[in-house]
Image 1: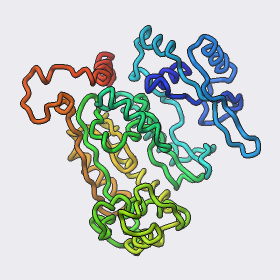
Image 2: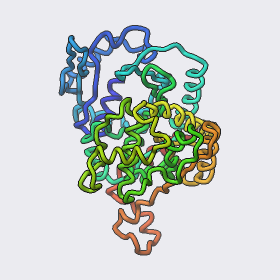
Image 3: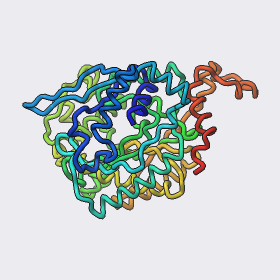
Image 4: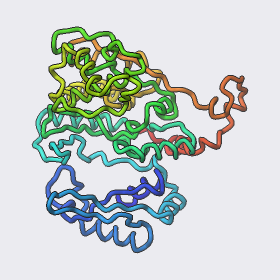
Length: 414
């Protein structure tokens, strides 16, 4: 386990750090979140041995403040010696690293974000079984992103610069549902897929088994739910409140911040620019509240996290529908990425699932993926011949090698 995790972060970027707990208490006790086959004595022996042999290096020792309980686990990196050994001697690649099918997938957190224990119910058992079917299909297929080596490095640097994003690990294609605030009525969205960290401008380059994809998402899902709860029909575009179309995104972010917050006192959202909009943050927030007056009573109540349980149940229906047919779907909260050939069926299934759960008609919109070959070869408008099509592009070698390895190993045929 330690070797595979070190290889994984080394494959992402040799500078990527791996968090490891050296607290013996983390390896004991009867917890649904702990690997029962992994003991501290075994783990520490392997850790110290790899460190002594020069295969891993501690970059940041772990610590914990007794007064507050806050701290950080030990951070390590895999050395070049280890990376080259595993890559050259074993020919290991990211497609070989698959998650354990027995690990816990229904996660419950408290108000501080810490994992808490719970007793299973009929609902949690059903959700876990559904996730088992969904993850089984994901393990048998290979989602990837068709970008060049330079673009890959740039993407990882972009993600490392953001506090709410993590580097892309292509082996992370195993989903969990995370519930919040000690309640299975709050949250429940699907997490764990690497594609969820890809910025929107690069998502059109996501592939499944080398095939082009489509992303279909629910349009204005939470405003539509809240209007329905009040017995009202939502506007065609709830985020169009009469301002310049350039500010639609800041309206959307402000609305989401207001329904997710437990008070009406929220900080300016990341896209807010007082000079561009021509009003202060308090003034802008007031305009947004007035535009959503029929549902403004939900602002500052934390209703957003309760709505996440509803939208995650909707998405579960969609994912299970396709999983039962062996077709992989890549969820991103309120959207789904899958093979573009299923576009019409996906739209129909998503619309039906929304109506089954909420009782109102849903609205979806789609974005097709794009072909990279033309722009990669610097010939966006010119005619191709067969040699152009078949000639490999060296800048995309990493992607091509992974896809070839996937087909060569016969994955997806089980």
